[in-house]
Length: 150
Image 1 (cartoon, rainbow, N blue to C red):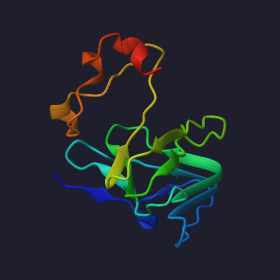
Image 2 (image 1 turned 90 degrees about the horizontal axis):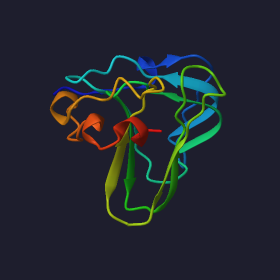
Image 3 (image 1 turned 180 degrees about the vertical axis):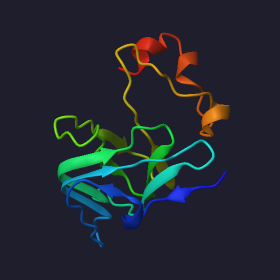
């Protein structure tokens, strides 16, 4: 499977976006990052290669992945703490849906996540682990999956 990693050239930017080194790999100060084009054979990634919980900071704006093959990958290393990925839908500031996780184990991990919106019945559901290449079972195989995503 080939893999695309987005850099500043490969992003569709709706507003200003700044990349700062040291403590922050990505700063969103009103910009919306729109990921597009990931497929099962060639998923798209934004890689945050900064193990600090401040690797992504946000004052406004968000990351729009909205495809099961558009991933945000955060290399957390052995650090622990509260990490937040500022997901959202489209270029609408009110559609901000942050994903937060508290890493309490100092294991060396890389978190890879993706989002996409669905209708009220939560369809379409993601494909099976063989079709999406993630190794994660299809959501439709989870009991009561119509409510599991909400």
